[in-house]
Each structure stands twice: as structure tokens, then as C-alpha cells.
Image (cartoon, rainbow, N blue to C red):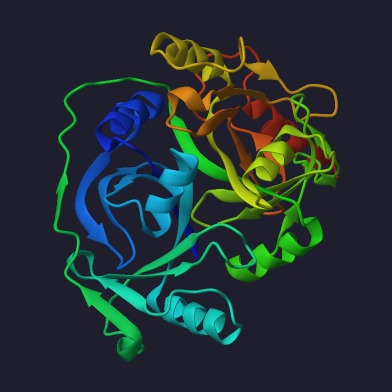
Length: 357
């Protein structure tokens, strides 16, 4: 299983496309696919699919006010609607059957997207996970569950988009979705079962020490991360203080789980440049400058872009890091051009200590 995409519901996909090309930079989006009349028997949508790394971005407008995406747009306005997870075909069929046997709220039937030779099913919002999750596979042979599959000649049309305008940005990686939850202990296991992978409880990522995180915006939360081998992660956040802003938003909607924000990563010596370029491009910046996570934090820079300028999406940027086999964080210098102490000094120092031993 890999983290395939984060998908937005918007009022005008053409406008949203320009917004996110400016946000990511056209140099960081190698391909854009325009989709017309893509349907799954519940929603018919038009929009775009941006190939970004390591997680893609979907931008869609439903044609009707009914269905999953239509009802969401009508009720909440623009924002994050669902994530899509990619599986191999055998794993896809096994997962669908397992979910169905366990009584999870899955689509009545699998839908086959004819023009892409892909099959999909939904884990419905009414399930224990509380938000819609889409599962997809690229088929390489006939489906064993063909009797329980709806075959559709869809989408009506698709084409690669020729992007003529250039919006240069530093290297930006779209990597993480944040999901806020109320039922802390229960949701950890719910998502571990859905994703078929263990949770990584975090507080201090560099030392792997569990603990509370204070985001300096009124939220004191416990974070849990689920990592994917192809890149990307799903983070669960549970605010421990009842008056936390994220708890207030969920309460106003009458829900206990919500897609909260997306996060991209930029190499630390480009963070201030990226902040400046976004402001110059007209984005509404929440923070007056990139903030340094100090004290008991991890030493990374971070800042937020206001949803008013990103089609209802709270957009977070964090200075980039990499994780080793033990899931321990270290700073990413791979895109850095300027430094005084060469990063490889640490590597040399570790080698020297190993030799002395």
C-alpha cells in the first residue's frame, strides 16, 4: 500500500489549478492531467490531477450537489475531501473482501474505471474512521470479484495539460495529511487496521521520545504517524485541551474526525525564500515569517498559509527532513547550496568514532 493522493473539492478547478501551480511551482509539477466526466456511480467530477512528489494532488468539482463530494461542497465549502491509497491488484481485492467481512462501511461494489484500467472502492465517511478514504489499483489481469464489479467507460475525456506559464519555486515535496480525532485510543487502532501498518507514536521525532506537542496556536496534542514505503505519511492529531481550536472546529461541524491540513517540505535554507515568494504571489500568510521550532521542539522551521487563499485548505510548510530505518529524524541538506559547516562532517565524525571502537 502506498499513499497515492490528497484530493480537494473546489468550486472552480481552473482557478484552483493556477493556485496550486503557483503554490508548488511549475518546476515541481512534472505532469498535469485534465479529467472530464470521471464517475464512480455516486459522483461525476471534472478537474485536474497534479503529479507531485511523493504524494499527488487531485482538484475536482462535482457536477451535482448530491453524492459524497457534492454534498461536502454544498455543506462545508471548498477543502480537503478524501485521500486515495494505491494497492497492488491482489492486495486490493484482499483488502476489499477483508473490509467487507469485518463489516466496514465499504462501497457495495467495486468500480472499474475503463479508460485507465483501474479499479476503486470507497471506505465511507460513516465508518469508524470518520472521513472518506478511496482505494485504487492498476489492474493487470481480470478481477476475481468481477461479479461484484461495476464496469464503467469513464472518464468521458482526459488529456495532458500543456502548462505555458512558469512559476519557479524551490524544491517542494507534498508529503503529509493531518487528521484530527477526538477518540484518541480508538482511532489509533482503527487507522492501523485500515492501513495495515503499525503506528509510530511521536513527540520528538529526532529522539523518538513520546510526548505532547504545543503548536503555539492553542492546540496541545498527541501525534501519531503512519509512514508509507513510497513516501508520504498520515498523521493523527488529538488535541488534549477541550478549548483547542481544532476541537472547536470539529464541534461546530458535529464530527469527531476531520481532514485538518496538508503539509509540504522545503529544504531549510530555502524556507525563507519560499515564504517570500508565496507572499509575493498573493498568498495570505498566517505567520509573519517562518517560525523556528525551539525549546523541546525539533529545530525545524515551519509556517502556515491561510485557507482563504488555498481553496479552503490550511497549508503547512516544514523544513525538510529524512528518516532512517528506525524512523528517526535527521535534517535534509540535499537541496542546500549555502552552508558554513559541511553537513558531511557529521558522517565523518561518526565514522571516526566507529573506528576508535
